[in-house]
Amino acid sequence: MTDTETHADPGASADSGHSAVSGVEIVLDAVTKRYPGQREPAVDNVSMTIPAGETVVLVGPSGCGKTTTMRMINRLIEPSSGTITIDGRDALSIDPDRLRRGIGYSIQQAGLFPHLTVAKNVATVPGLIGWDRKKINARTDEMLELVGLDPDTYRNRYPRQLSGGQQQRVGVARALAADPPLLLMDEPFGAVDPITRGLLQDELLRLQSELGKTIVFVTHDFTEAVKLGDRIAILGNQSRILQYDTPAAILADPADETVAGFIGADASLKQLTLTRVEDVDLGECPTATEDQPVEGLRSAIAEREWRWGLVLDRQRRPLRWVSTDHLAHASSLREIGLPVGETLTLRSTLQDALEALLSEQTATAVVTRKRGEYAGLISIDTLVGHLSNMRAEYAHGTNDAPAEQGGAVSGTGATAIAGADDAT
Image (cartoon, rainbow, N blue to C red; front, side):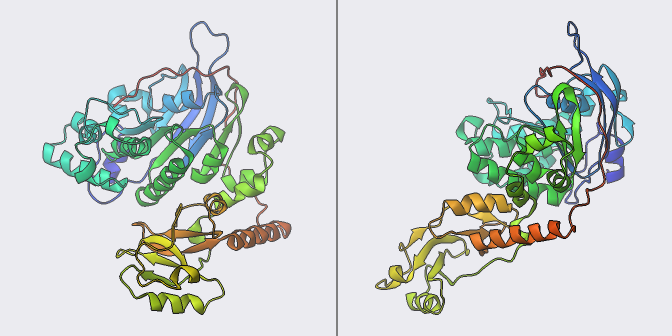
């Protein structure tokens, strides 16, 4: 099946080949949701355009209507009025089950079936749409590798045997298994610890850079919205979208005092979220693998003002920091030095870097590549220099023009009501 055929029918399955399926445009036009017995609609007259291939984040406080709005896209909640089109086709014209099978869906705490293995969880939708066993097995392993889980290790485990972060990765793999052009994510990382959450966010950014899906992501965390979103829709009371724009435009020019208050007083620090580690010049230090001679690393460190180096494993993954003191009487690079703490990836943001640097004794964090190989170093000086440059740019008016609006939303609404099961 070609990409064109896949996009023409959001309820159809996609070919699971290596070429990525690009996303599809979603248009909400005067969409309203009313519940019996409630005077005010939960979502009232919402109109917005979600561009193909972009991640659009709906962000706002609990009860503002963001989850209800998202669930109307795959008809887990049926709209009371208005239209939703997906790649130009009216979602209401598609059988609901067929529609949902063509849309990836990932929720908080993963929503995995506890009685099924990891492989069977991932294979749920491909099985429902009639893929043969050989194709399903190959796709399952492909998806587990894509989200950083070794198939041989995790394929036959059950959800209870996984950590929270691993469960969320399986949930994302299941959502992507049938290669849908559209992925809905309802606070998928809200139930994990902050470090794991940051890693999962980085993983999603990596996946999106490779796959180019259209993603609608719901969160109440504005920092997460800035990190992940190509565009952000900030929802206020009664389901009004207060501002719908790029993260940079919202941070630089909040639409009103309510948006400014939602952003918070640390807007300048949130600017760090707009820059990836890969976009700044990384530092370097002497390195050596564990099986190399001590003298070579000792000499390389002695020639530098900053007297630290890194010991790597055979795959060049960072293991330990070592100083001239550690090496003074050492005969081997094995088991000496200080363990490397939290590492960053090239897709991490500078705000992630700041948080990591604050916990590092060396005030320097290690950056790794996709497979964990050493890529370079980032320091506090790097962040200070970046913020100084940003202030200078805004002072000269180079970054004060807001980006083109992606659409507009108007309307009022009462407290949102959630209440739909995870569909496959």
